[in-house]
Image 1 (cartoon, rainbow, N blue to C red):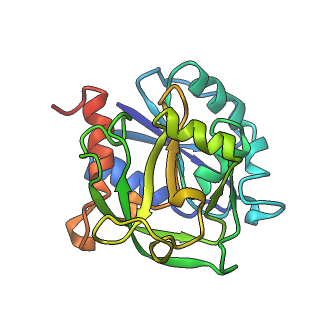
Image 2 (spheres, rainbow, N blue to C red):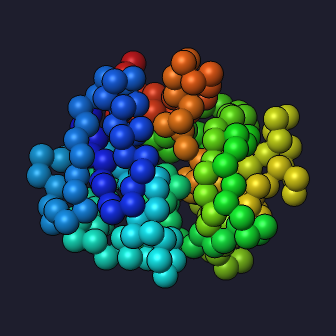
Length: 235
């Protein structure tokens, strides 16, 4: 499986992601510059990753300018043709701005940047990045964002729930969802979603920062293993 990690001006988690995909998961991975206008060598079973960071300094809104980078039309076409696209933190914001995922990421309810470990509850196993998890499985994954409060209309939120598109919700260490366990005030505690076709994923927490024993946490590795297993790379 081949991975492409898009680098925007202000991306700062691209090398972290490349390290995990290449050195930890032993997969082919290349950097893709945001001014590229195509994705040569990528096929339907491959994955494009939009990493975390502060693309274009988060001016206007987080992800609002990056959405118009030349490469994004190729990313949109790739997703519409069934390719995997995974946006993490700033990448999630860009996917929402580009219309590949519904909703938007707003300023955290406390109006502050938050950087800490949080707990996530797995809401569905019906996605490539959660296929090897258990329903309601709790993961500890770090967050680092100022605009991570997921927001959408009630109609969209109801549709996400009805279509089983909510991947993760914020919870406490026992899997209970409550206001105290919701770090940014996200609607319905949402931490990650997928599109209706289940090939585009967005999440605010950083699994690449929790994928190695040396970091003291390997919960994030389960997501990469799920994607590789779903794609037939791992058995």
